[in-house]
Length: 66
Image 1 (cartoon, helix red, strand yellow):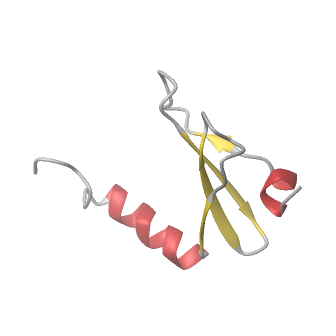
Image 2: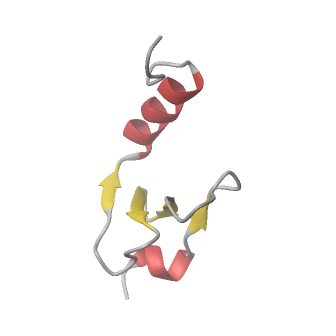
């Protein structure tokens, strides 16, 4: 069991239709995985990397067609 499994995974309240990602925070890292393939591994980010990504999402940096 890795550190993310101990902490638990969280799925967005906006999830629907099965196309979701899950996030877990543990040991100074943020893990992201595909909810349809929980055993398929995860991407790991530092808190700073994750914070920059979240700030970009909130700021519209990744909005398509704008």
